[in-house]
Length: 190
Image (tube, rainbow, N blue to C red):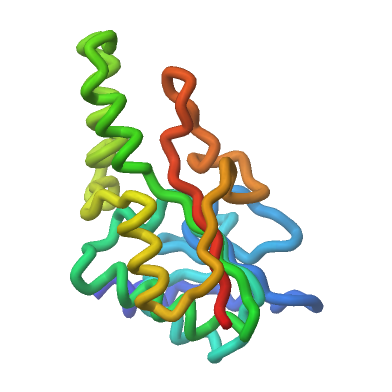
């Protein structure tokens, strides 16, 4: 499995003096955040699959941010596992911010008769992934109700929607035809 392969490649970062804040799938280094990603890279602090955060102790993380990650997980096993792991490693009162393509918005956009053929293909790619490599496929379409149900089932409370998910310039802020295509939710561990 890729996780065990990458564990051997993982570099051990210095833990921050303050609270540990994880940016799952992050691409931008930030002094206040540690990046956790499936693939190693110069910006990556921890390597692994987000369905297995065993390298972090229970309650050791104050905040998790994941933008356009969860849609790459199967909804039967992988997504519930990842959310359970997020919940496990967060400290009591810790916060989670997630952003995913909003299936309801994308369906409305796809059905817009004013779209050109090229624009319709672009919306379809936002739904199903760009499919430029093995990891660029979306396995689940999420609406606010679906994602809130998954979060609640994992034990999260205080689930709210916002226009923007976090401090990074990333997919959570994408606008297409004057509409935000991302569903941005925040929640906390009780």
